[in-house]
Amino acid sequence: MAFTTAAVVRNLAQVTYTDFKTGTFADNDALDAFLTSTIIPDAEDIVQDYCRTTWTDSTAPDGVKVATKQVASNMLHIMILNKQGPTVNVGDYKVEFADRNPLSDAVKDLLAKHVAQGKYVKVTESQTDEYEDQWG
Image 1 (cartoon, rainbow, N blue to C red):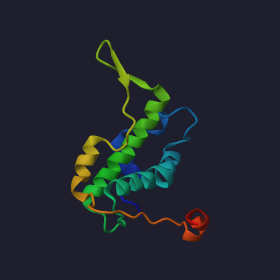
Image 2 (cartoon, rainbow, N blue to C red):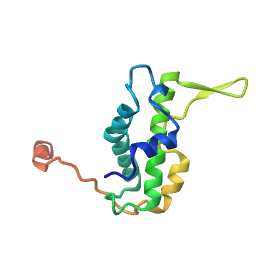
Image 3 (spheres, one colour):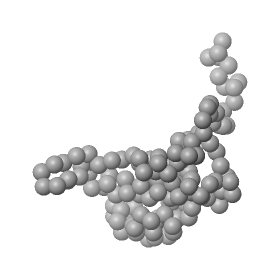
Image 4 (cartoon, rainbow, N blue to C red):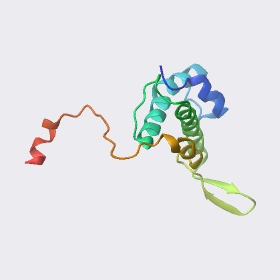
């Protein structure tokens, strides 16, 4: 179980498989499978890394779950922006680069009270003996 579901993220983002480059997804089920296997876990990692805290599905605060949904939605929009090109028109004459950061200021505001203070150690599968030669 994840912090959110593919259907919720797709609904929040207001996208279907037809919004992506032709052939990327065969149908909404294929998009949902991609969301479940890639986008949602990546969004959870981004949020947890930013907060310097690790939660399980049952311990994640509601604010963290809401932020994860938004990050996943932003990631889908970034995929669509990448299809359209690196710039967006703003007004009649101004062109600027589209924001491609899924961790927007609004998401950071949502997460502000969940950011851990102090040192953060991320657990990995690496073993210290793999680095023994470098430590000399």
